[in-house]
Amino acid sequence: MQDTAIVKCDNMPLQDKKIVVTGGKGFLGRHVVKKIEEQGCAHCDAINSSDYDLIRLDDIRRMYDDKKPDIVIHLAARVGGIGYNRENPATLFYTNLIMGTQLIHEGYLRRIEKFVAVGTICAYPKFTPVPFREDDIWNGYPEETNAPYGLAKKMMLVQSQAYRQQYGFNSIFLLPVNLYGPGDNFDPQSSHVIPALIKKCIDAKLNNEKEIVVWGTGMVTREFLYVEDAAEAIMFATAAYNKSDPVNIGAGFEILIRDLVHLIAELTQFKGKIMWDENMPDGQPRRMLDTARALQEFGFRARTAFRDGLKKTIEWYYASKLRER
Image (tube, rainbow, N blue to C red; front, side, top):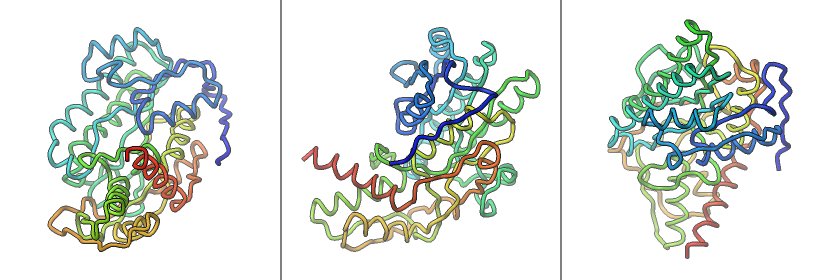
């Protein structure tokens, strides 16, 4: 069990603030809300699409009028894995762009104290030098399957910096790496790599299947951050960071997808054959973040060991499958 970190920040103590977390009932959002409430904040509202459709300007205005927030943490996103990205590029671009643009602008009009824009590692160029440094974010085009989503989210950085420059609006931009943990999205149509692999291995084991098929060559790398660590980083930045420069949120390591598959097979006790469908795309060649800025600016360092986080995620999914049977 991790200790609860308490942020002491003279700039913006959270206890007396009215905070809205878009996507606050989702995978990451639930953990962010919990972290904020642990700071003694009694006015943290988690909202999702059933409360307000953030694609609609009228709903955004209604949300601001109803909640009257001091701070907005924008986590809501339309997102998926490589397959979903390939099938829905226009939806991903429009939905994510319009949500961020309108939320920031309406927040500025209402003179809220702070807007926390949570972007994505997919905003980085396809061939970014490793480790990814924030200063490299404009040095190339994103990996093609991620580009519509990544660029739509990246526009929040442009807007944040422009509104700070012209209006003095306090908006920050965070770049989290791939997240994982209990409660993740395990839908095979839209899940990311860790939940997809856990599902493949456990489902195959429960169904006595002798092999699983994995997309790509397995020779690309990824970095992963446990969801509770990500939530803590967002909470720290909300309390203590007030600059225009983007900030990476990650664990600072990379692992080959081939090694990841074998690790998940080991932890799930799947002993069947692993087949690689090399006709399917790998995605970005390498991913690993330089996390020095987050440590320097607001004291964040990931605390959950990768193997431990995987075990917790596997245990959660396995238990959920047993409840279904």
